Image 1 (tube, rainbow, N blue to C red):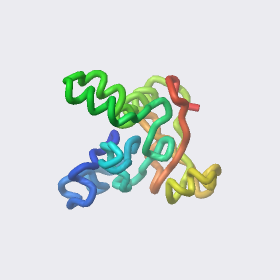
Image 2: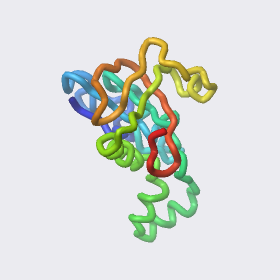
Image 3: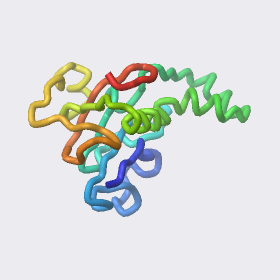
Image 4: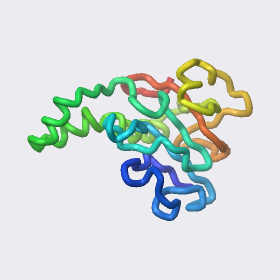
Length: 160
């Protein structure tokens, strides 16, 4: 099993699968997308589904508790305040580490519901398991195939 933790988007989005994570890389590939906005929106992750199961916490873009004030973030980067940069502008991208770690250390399951698009998720059309839910992370059962969406808390513990 391979777990892709917010796979890189910039320069990889439309590249050959040989150059990025792909279902052919392992028996089961799980991708967790937490920062799939475009690079123009300061997104560092990949929105495109690239695994056997792709999980999109909070829609896979802006994570709750992470703010994006472009001016102050760029100032942090320019002045070399990398720690402040990663805790602000890269917050959504780095959130995947917290979620995956919590999937190891918690009994709470990040249960994703099958859903075709972020638009459907945002509209509340993905509230049921339908064809089957799947658990994200280390203690998941590696049975999911498709796209899964769920909501988290804005601070730890993140699992609802």
